Image (cartoon, rainbow, N blue to C red; front, side, top):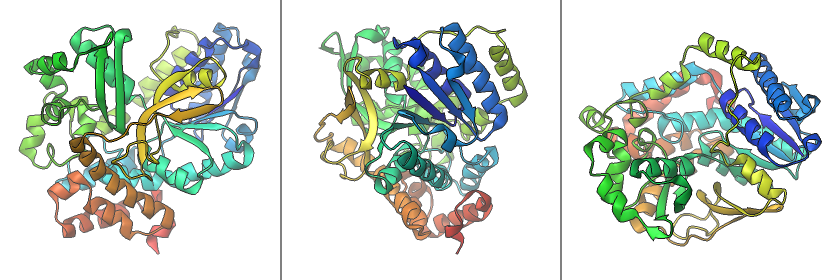
Length: 439
């Protein structure tokens, strides 16, 4: 069983999945791992950490292969994980700071909005190149993408390579469920939920504890002003729309026209900052002390720091275990709608419950979302669709269209102002973007 990680230098994420892989009840000698990253320094760290994980779990270290050339890693791969970042902190800084000068205030900016669209323009060509190599070198592989903007990238891939076994994975569903359990003081293991929508904006349609509907208890709990300060915009959406939404409040504050269109609203609905909606918070996340961070990695690699071997909350290895015949596993995954959610466009990417069993993944039928939830999803989907058209057709005008209809951007700016902002972003980010947009 060969598992390949592209963007393995995403060290914390890759380490979690490697630990989960080491926990699986497979014959040790049958596990093979390929690690791919274009950053040799990061690749060196994760390679040494992977060797340590294998040694401590009695897996032969010679089964680890590290390379900067993905074409050397892909042949024979049955499972491929993609977690990449195209463009450095300066590209992200432009995603945040240029729109902010126009009044478009983003917290993370990696999913939709100006930041999400331009990240998609940078990232999609690389993802498509990876998928072309997969189609040539290991066409039967299951490919799991963890890269944002999730929906746009999955949509682009499935339009270009419809037969590729390509699925988007995110931890926002299970992380939100765990948060709800913590808010309520419930055991996470007893919580039952049915969640559907789009990535970062999926809805807890059912919430039960040991078979009992507990939504009424949660509605009472969110009246607590201290809890409101911790998860502000999601609680506001819950109060007004009737259902709890996935992802953090900081992310969700960007995906609608309600919370960030004026400075007074940003101040009101982002108390405490950070993941609750702080302006430009992504720059803090990506701008951590890199020297100290690498010192910590060295301590992990050389054995000074212990590696926790508890199971992570990521779905990746549980999915592999089910695909390899380890039973049936249900996970929310991102894939083309095709009638699964009947009041969202059939071609869009939805995040829905999927049943994983030996050799196959089957999405569950959801039906109609409540109309107020589908309406907000469609506002986001229409912007995603135009970004997809820009990427696949190489037509610059669709980038403008995507942001003319973006919920937050349209709430703040006129058409002329959006055009001017996009023009400035194209000039500032030219080194990161496909040449087709400059002819």
